[in-house]
Image 1 (tube, helix red, strand yellow):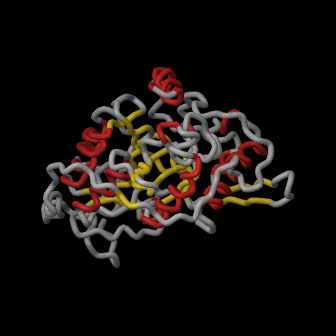
Image 2 (cartoon, rainbow, N blue to C red):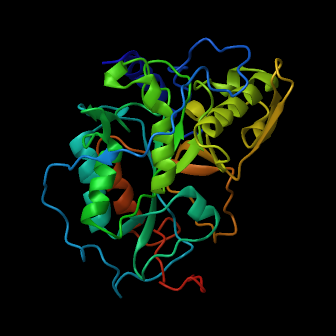
Image 3 (tube, rainbow, N blue to C red):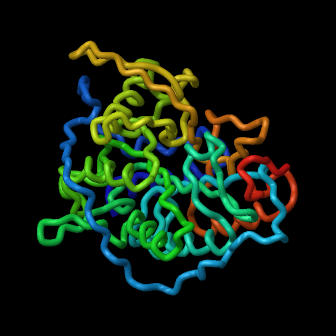
Length: 361
């Protein structure tokens, strides 16, 4: 088990009592000594303009039929309903409080598909572009912390292939089997955290080379996935002064821009679910590099909290993009959440009416 996982597991018991609260702090598991000045905010990441690698074929598995989970007249449209934003951390060989087993992750996708959910990004929610067939429901898959198990490469004869075991490999394979399951997951990345949490791998940890980091972000952006800022090295923003908070956030975005120039980051995920003391700094602020004198300003339309359950529909008058709640996935939380969403009432699921020009209430 890597140091990141050990730290998070040790903190789990302390955090569990407050998971219902947004401000759940489990320690700065990713913390690394921050540099005082890096112009591009990237802490030495190497860039590459290599073409996107091929994807290895995943082992054949029994799939869900193309018609499974399709919308039906029995599922009444409700576009004011709740949308589950599912939060993943580590994805690997073992199942734990902070890690999803590879096979269990694949099962999650099969369950969602069979129960009539299709993926959308946070951007689509913000833009109210949830264009799904009648009777289907949106789900947002979010991956925090940029660990190698989420996205890893395999090098074969000098060429890079997406590891079919990694979360990205599983998502790409699922899309091949189900054309209506699009590449719409969201990756909230860290460029300079410890234990390999630096754009999905660093310094040979889990076989991932530093030189591959920029290529991974470029591949995600080109493939239709959404990139989200998660700060520079996962600092507990509630412990630091305003200037430090803004540096962490601004340099995290600068690092994304270094990998994918001019990429518009619209979403920020709170590390540990902890708000800064000056709360609005989570969605807007600036930092001036002391060496270059250049100022980086950031502004986000959405801030992802760490818990709170399915989030409100963007058509709900009470929707607030700066407070988007999520569902942490471990154990049977997925099934529990979907069962609750299927119950009538204020917490019922969002169901599309199939017509982008109308809002079913």
